[in-house]
Length: 406
Image (cartoon, rainbow, N blue to C red; front, side, top):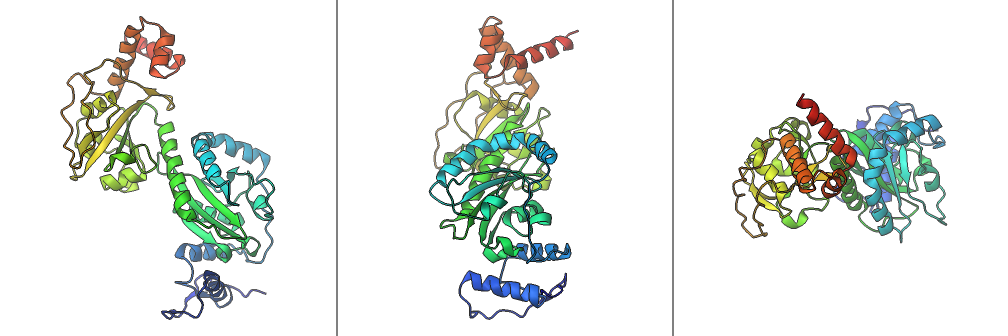
């Protein structure tokens, strides 16, 4: 019988520089012995996030040897979960398909959960001999820490930070044959929208799973942020122009009031911001560039060099999103196109913006639509096709503008 565990394990004696065990499995085994049998904190043997997760499980009166069913949530909850996460699933679909294709020669399974740890996607492994993974990795199974103990998905859902959990680092004995690596996906508010996970059973990954899942989670997060960027100017920038369009591109959304609505992790790194310090920052002050000049960047697909107030020069592209978040308005005949700036070792600050550029996003959008309508002699269908938006969007805009004139 496992002895009663203290919620505040005593600090174990420091390990010698060269402990007698060499394999990770031996280190994890000693960590479990110290924590679960001796009530000692196994600092240095396993990661701190794993130790804290073990402690939370013990505090919830769970025991490593107990049986866990891994049953799916109720049908009603699953329907509600899938409906609530349609935007996440849509944003993730292309990247998950790419990731599954990359892993097709391995036994690794891709799992996506919502922010609470409920599985909303799990890749199939036809003909695979695994026994535990097909049970654990099913759509609807709650892999949160409260039900499934320590696992990578659960720890990310609890902490919001990426982690790898290997073998016996899992709390429950029944899933100790699994190894998993997971990374978070955040929404525009900085809240956890989902968790992407790679899991394999009874074998090692054979590659850096943490790095791979981190890249794909970032790519999904970028798609998610842009997919819900309604009526916003989306800025994409990086110090290295070849990174534009990649998961490492920095992204920022500018609202109709000229303030930053959201940023991704790369943008916060380049701008020197914390996640909590982003909301309502003025875009002009943050980029050291007038809003009209940022808007003028949408007129040319080539990247433009912009020097930030912190002295860093970045290469910038910009796109104006339609109010459905899924389409982009393409500026037409608003101002002379900005000159193409080719990448160079020492880029210069951006040239002054064209004076004809509108001062606000709303004015810019209206000018785009009106110019395109004039070009197509008022034909709504052709105008919608040229702008890449729906006819319904144009009708709503025209109706709203007509109401303003009454």
